Amino acid sequence: MKRPEPVAVVKQRREGLLRALVDEVPYIRFMGIRFDRRGDELTAVLPYRDDLIGNPVLPALHGGATAGFLEIAAMIELAWSTLWEGVEAEGALPQGPLRLPKTIDFTVDYLRAGLPRDAYARARVNRSGRRYASVHVEAWQDNRARLFAQGTGHFLMPGSGTAK
Image 1 (spheres, one colour):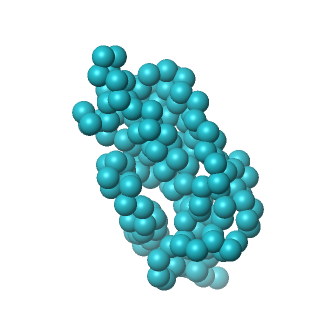
Image 2: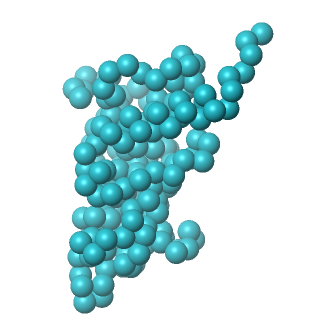
């Protein structure tokens, strides 16, 4: 019987995979998005910055910043959940650049104005096959039960004829 790996090794591998995924998308750095990982659950965090405000009269987060944040959260969750099983089975990170899912379409529901403060998002993969995936994502600020936006995206999976 194979002896379980030390927790620190598994944790390091999980952090390495998340870092590799995030490093593949320069827009994540541009937006300042980071990910908080608890086990296999990811929460995307969009720290507040003045330049994210779209309407200074309200003030409210720009709709494009909100949509980009939701799409990034959905894409990274999908890639994370897809790649994680292989990483656990092989006991190592994939070699070379990672191939991320490609967005087919992404729909955003703006439920209320995003306030000038940090935003959080969690995505749930509804369906993931060899070629296609559907992901739902929800965003909130101070209260998880009071969403300010939600989105649904459809993605073309890597390996189904897509280039990097």
